[in-house]
Length: 318
Image 1: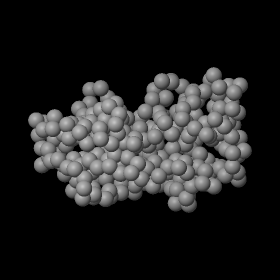
Image 2: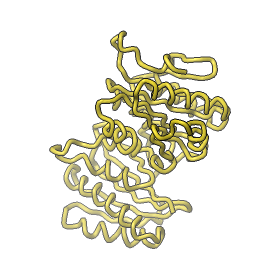
Image 3: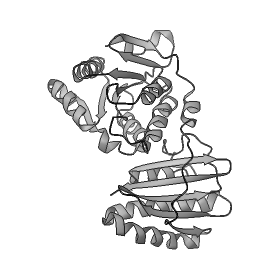
Image 4: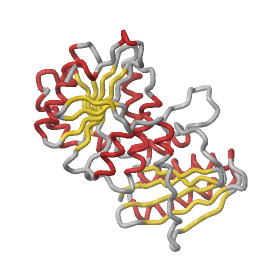
């Protein structure tokens, strides 16, 4: 598992590789992932392994002799919110090793991911192809065929140009334009429950009321001042965006579910950029940071946007 995963510069094709790895047992998983890492290190690449905790331990144990040359991250922590993986994990690592090829193992989807999280995970996998196109990088994404649903595995073929399993490396005949694929996960969000608290806002003078509204409801559920502050800041950024870019103001809702607190912001604006929230704007750019910040601060951000309006749904686990 070495040469087929590394771009051949002589062909003139993109230097970016994004294979999906289909594995069914720990032995194959360890062999394939550590083979990828050792090949990358031998080529002088900067290497990051970002997979969920139990799998991380397996890889670390097998790479003990080269562990000092590899960066490790628990994806269940660093990538708890799928929307923060591209800016906060992948691009951050690439920026820290500017001028070098980076080789990354990123496992954003594992059997314990919920149906609530999954659309954001799948959109993330599709958007990697757009964000890293032309970059000198390889990102290997493992998928547990013994624990994931068939629909998830089918989507892996749609979001990865090539797939690798015990039979070898194959081009995906289901791979499509990454922006088209990502758009298929722009799914409607159900209306807030009838018991949800809500507040309408339409000017900057009301942002203080928005912050107090979110804080007052959040502290009853989260009971952690820092996490309440994170949610308040994320909500403030998105409501401020509404005031600046949408007509007619917006409405914010807060309610509690058994496992998490939800804060929803909805307005009549449209998020036209499919990479919004995935790429940090340049310092001189006007706006574009609100969704980046929300992804950084919240445990999950779901968004549904159309020409008629947008719903942002922020989740904080209890």
